Image (cartoon, rainbow, N blue to C red):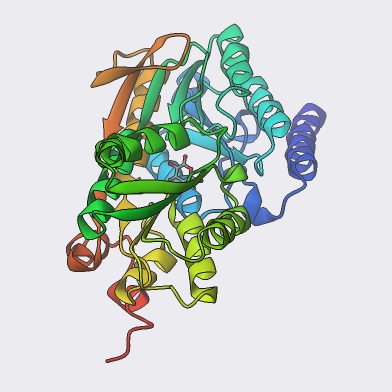
Length: 363
Ligand code: BGC
């Protein structure tokens, strides 16, 4: 009995330490409700050796709307498959993300799923997991220069292509601003590659000039707003189009445009189908977002995670080079959403309700 109390006490202590070291509020860090292995009541067959599969989910941040959806939907999907999940987020700090992943590994997970904050720094996590015989799935963002076992994401290059195709059809000529994502995130590079695949021929023809092109440190919107302000100032407000790597940065760019009386006057693209972006689209200050149904990503990743954890074969569509190996990859298709198809995409899918999206539209 004493031993049992000691064990439960130990588990509680570890839980408290995880919360304290992360230094975050509840919103920014989460360990799933699923208790640790030691404290879990086990039915008779599990005592006989059939323990449920346990997945660890190491997230970068929960500060953006989409990651909260990823957390909930991934947890649900894993549990629907009869497995357990422990989730922890690193508040955008590299050392903390590595530390947290190490704790998950120590606690006996069967497989680790990682959303890296920093594509390079998280290679250590893959090494640590492999040392413990645990496979690693890169979720949404690719871990670079490491032997990642599987990558599950959307086609991020296509995200950029879809943005640029839509915006160039509205502004075929003129001065463009590109507000990139975080330089430390491989997705930001893929998205930019997709955008310039479309812009380059138009730049060569002389139709388009990219007058401003900057990364947004850590994807933080205030950094994007500063970038947009700089771009406006340097060009005497003579900007014809803005492509922004996600909706949070697009929102910030639109605030900078608004301060100059330009919101709604030039096309702006973002990504993620955030509620605020959907609201801007129907009120005409943002032109386009790229919708990536998170449920499909979470369910695909959960299914493949449980399979890999059981040692089963998984089928991948293709491979993506991460600087070290060709990583087997499953890449889902993103969807371009503007005012004209917002109902049959985001709303019909239940990603946001019609009431929420149209709440600022007057009848
Ligand atoms: C994701 C985007 C997200 C961004 C900032 C990217 O890696 O693909 O959906 O908006 O990170 O969190």
